[in-house]
Image (cartoon, rainbow, N blue to C red; front, side, top):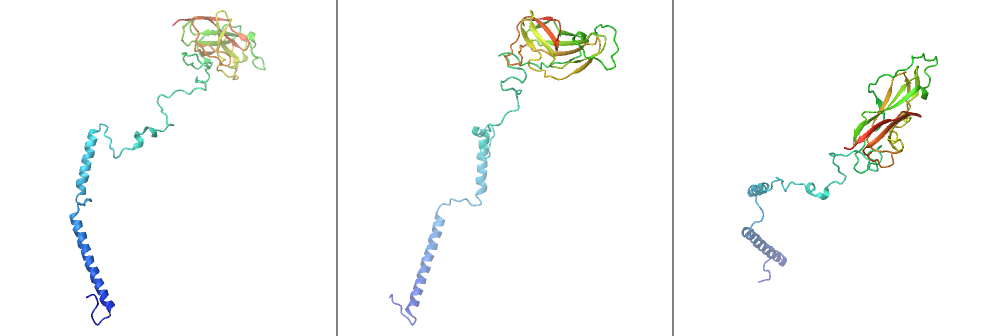
Length: 280
């Protein structure tokens, strides 16, 4: 039965048998895979099922959006917009910006402030154009051929003015220095900002309480030809705070009391002008 019979060599018959057997086995494998594919449940969606699934997904998203009052789509939310750890620590707000302060926490040029005292205004001296009458002087003399001479202390008068003789504690009085040529001829005087000074003293002129040169007013040359009898004035808005040379000590608000105002140009000093601070 197993031995090949025929006129051809034996290996030809064995090859035919193996080919026939392989064909039968291959046929049974094809039949088996077909039956398995037909009977097993499908896990993949066909093209016809995709629109239905996508519609269901959109319905789920719509229901989620209706339940969420913020209307945030969870599929598009950037996690970095809600994660506090992603906030840039270098970002700063431009609203409510505060003024630039010095290293001591005080606006530059004001010196340290006492706790509770307001920031000072600009206490720089400035030209003052308050109308004032000319000062009577002797008849004007002709200027020498070489030009007006330098004003000596005897040729000028220096005065101290305040805008009102009484102020409330916390006010910002306007203090003035007035220079007038009381000689009969024009003369030249250096009204350098560092040579001018407006000073607040106690009433007895024993304790120096504030000076216009302590915190501001750098030196600036200001040569003026002073016309006889014509006042030249400078003013400063005083903060009502104390000061010391160099503006290094804490600045405290002067209390209610009686005070004296003095001014000077170099070593030419004005007469005293009293004023009063009353309680608020």
